[in-house]
Length: 137
Image (spheres, rainbow, N blue to C red):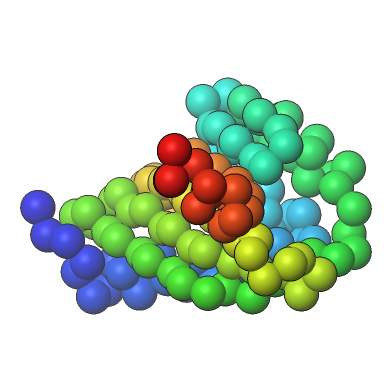
């Protein structure tokens, strides 16, 4: 299996940054289009567990549309062959303390009819001080 074929990697990178732009501008239509329209789609968020496209869209529509800006600290995109990829990002927000970071991971599949779509996503927030305390135990 080929890892990170340049053409495939470029496609997924474009999808990742299209998602990022839609996320911070609250472009719900684009966010919805980027998620696989299926009951099998999962998004585990910082404070919500969403199963299926309907729950994910309802969350997006109800989410506040202010204070969404964030800064990406690290992004890793890995493609496997031509139709599966993962994206992982570490991010922060201006109003967060310096010890807090967010983590986002996505699994994407390239479907013949719809192209690249997110089939699974996870978002969590880590307080570095708490993590460092746990590591010492």
